[in-house]
Image (cartoon, rainbow, N blue to C red; front, side):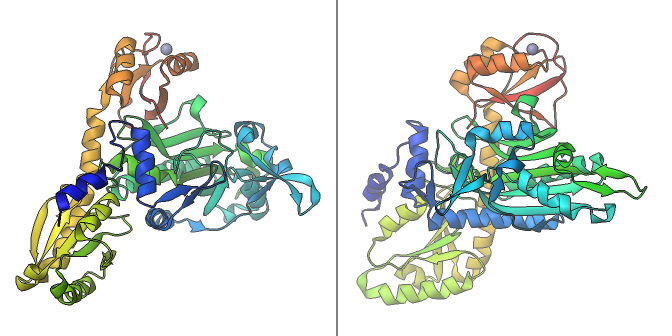
Length: 484
Ligand SMILES: [Zn+2]
């Protein structure tokens, strides 16, 4: 096998990350068959490999959403214009991105229907019927759905006109309960991002200018991508009584007085797939965390024509022993072993298991890790045990690498000149003092394209910090970055 030579040829097809990160990203997504463009502008087709990754992400999160007492339901795709426009702030926030249905067949509709850009309006109008008494509370519902936002600039997985997501919508009896729910789901997102996606995140509160349209408070998890830009990976909103008052979601409390409910909503979307690609990938392609990888281990036979049957039989036998993992047996005879090595490496499969005639003799298999490329010889009878151990190790290693990268690319400064220099050269997060004024926030945004990603939940103590824009004493430290 001319393995070395082939590897070089193959890798050339991906633009190196440090040459053009955006092109590298598109190359990886398309060449690993995760997604493709369509003739429909701004829309993508998620191909089976990308969809399998999304399904694993979805299942991991769905399990956590249910474990915290929520149930799934499904609400209509259409939102009548009169409902969407009831809440001024909300509609103003979404109006430029709404797609409208104007006809049913050939008949013009009496009222335009929006294709949901988010479902607060339709769901609140339904909750108004469901909630009568304090006994009906809390309502803890989540929906997995598609939404449409008419985006001008789109990017595979990160920003597409139609995308998939989950949106939780809850109603509570008190403000305290709603706030606890908002923070609980933020915590769920953080734990999920870090343990399932191996993606470290900063969790915190959005400033007023970056809040969800109609929310009282918006919380976010922010991840740092390998090009030094931040990615908003999930948000959780305390909606207060804003929507409840507009849509009339009222209940008779125990004290016989009529009250409005307190609400939350929270969501993550298919942009997490893009986040996983940009957090872990390298110049050879994807590197997928084992917990969500569509294929956790791939068997590649090494044979000469005389040993083909024996090797394939051994692989089928070993494959059976690994049935509790997501395993692929690549027994294709149309491709060389070297080609397969490159293919699966590019697709980010955590473990490759090679079996050849010599290995059969020695009753062993050869495991190669995607993250470190370490080659490990394992006795057949210890294979399952070793695979389990290695998958855990890789999961931790990917998280630790991403965390080390984030730490290296987080700078603490209140000096505006240094701030600008870091943004241009080192990139990443900058922790700076902020006086709280929207004018200072706006000035930094206009002059540097960096936004306040969040006021962190942890470590916001100012300790003598001053506002990076105006130099006045700062009541909190915030995370700035350029972002997706
Ligand atoms: Zn200031």
